[in-house]
Length: 206
Image 1 (cartoon, helix red, strand yellow):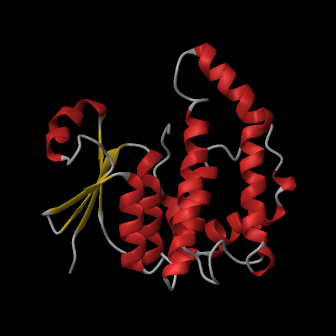
Image 2 (cartoon, rainbow, N blue to C red; image 1 turned 180 degrees about the vertical axis):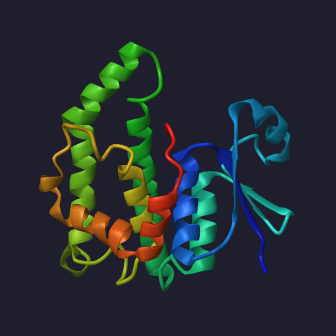
């Protein structure tokens, strides 16, 4: 039996998508959540001094969150059914990452930079991204399914995992994005394995 270990800090952050993939696949793994003070001990064991890090069977080590997500998605059957669906999954993942980078500017930095970033984020950036995701979803089976094909993929999980970070922002009107709202329910509630993970996952600061 393949042995998986996921190393990250005690938070959702960049490791959470991998955890969703493990959950959706019903795959057992070791979820190692280190304390900040333990990082110097673990850092030399990583390929590039970064986490998350996935270890497979004690010898294969992989860093970079999207590389980990793609590896797991392909192994567990969440990367599409052919090269076209795989390419579309990759497109959604990359666009999700672009959105995440803009959101992080509102969280990290000095007060002035965070305030400026938040004004842009809530002023237009966030909703412009969501509008594009809504159109992309609507173009596939009238938006009543998933971003890619007719089954859940890493694209859907990646989008929902990210938007959980800011879904409760008071300025965000999910009523403007009915297809995306329904997608979030399909992924987080209708998928029983992901729903079970969300019900039991640790509550953390990030």
